[in-house]
Amino acid sequence: MKIQQDNLSEEDSRRKQIFEIVLILVFGVTVYAFSATFDILEKIVKISWDHEFFEIDELLTVSFFLSIALLIFWIRRWKDLKRSLSEIKVLRGIIPMCASCKKIRDDEGYWHQVEAYIGEHSEALFTHSICPQCMQELYPDFVKQRR
Image (cartoon, rainbow, N blue to C red; front, side):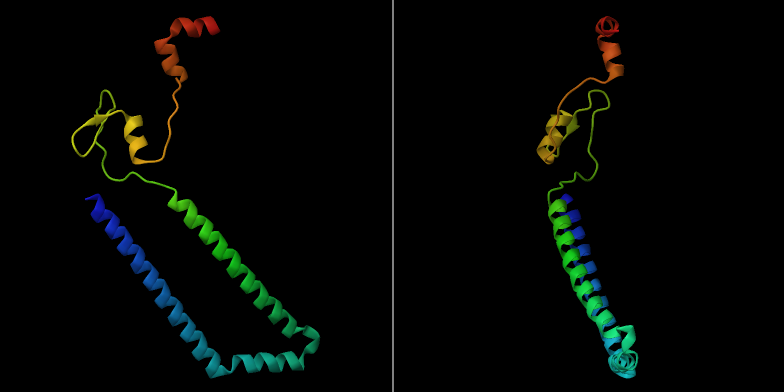
């Protein structure tokens, strides 16, 4: 069942990627058609020549540079995020747990301590301590001594 869920999530991811690519292509073709129909670049160049004191050509050059810089920045952030997400291992589905001792039953029917089960199925590490409430219940004399 887990394999089917993983396949579905991969399939959904592929569908989303294909949809995004198609959306980008449609948007690009629309921008091209609009630009070609109304001669946008020629009008910008004409305005730039007519109003040189606005420095429109320099603003366009800086805008283009900033767009490229933002694209490079976005790609680097995306790669960092992708690398970080690849390190995350997620437990999914219903995990049968004993209501009394809190052991977890695996797919083969064996019971494991929570720490062992999660340690096997993820990269999490455990350390142990005692919360104040349990300390009071289990070691009341020690708590009184400390006060």
